[in-house]
Amino acid sequence: MEAHSLLKKQGFDVSSYGTGTHVKLPGPSLREPNVYEFGTPYKHMFDDLRRKDPDLYKRNGILPMLKRNLSVKLAPQRWQDNAADGYFDIVFTFEEKVFDMVLEDLHNRDQVLLKSVLVINLEVKDNHEEAAVGARLALDLCEQIEAVESWEDSVDDILISFENKHRRKLLYSISFY
Image (cartoon, rainbow, N blue to C red; front, side):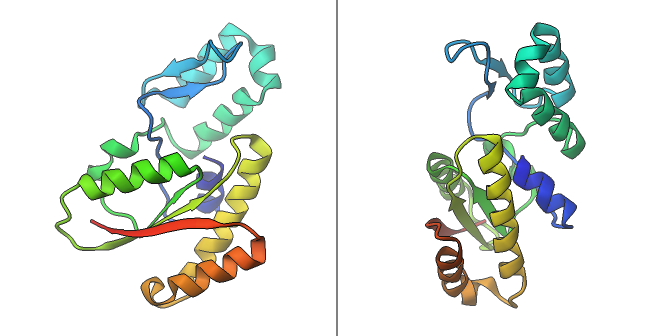
């Protein structure tokens, strides 16, 4: 959601999704996560956690994260349920298993438009600091891709240049709608 927030502020048309079966947020222990259905408003999650243990969820950054999410969109959405949202030119993932799930979902859809979509995985550790770094890197990559007339003709050069500049290895694939 950090990348969504930054890209939106920079004027990009952006959406964000999860790929799991539920939204899981850290709880009082690893065995006790807070689990919500996709579509549950961020305001509800915020109020629920603030009621449960405001000190814990403020200290671990979950309440500030949910407050930020509230300013970005109403509720989390699930990638596998997004077909009605239209198509995307680029899909970023920040974890390899999510990259694999997105590609599998795209390959299982009816590909009637034959419109290409670039799927890029930029591996980011799941913490607030790394999410901020990952968001800036995603913005840099979006700006580089947007600067060319046709990303399909330049994608290899753009991604190799990015990898060299930032010393980050990217996974990417081209799929179709």
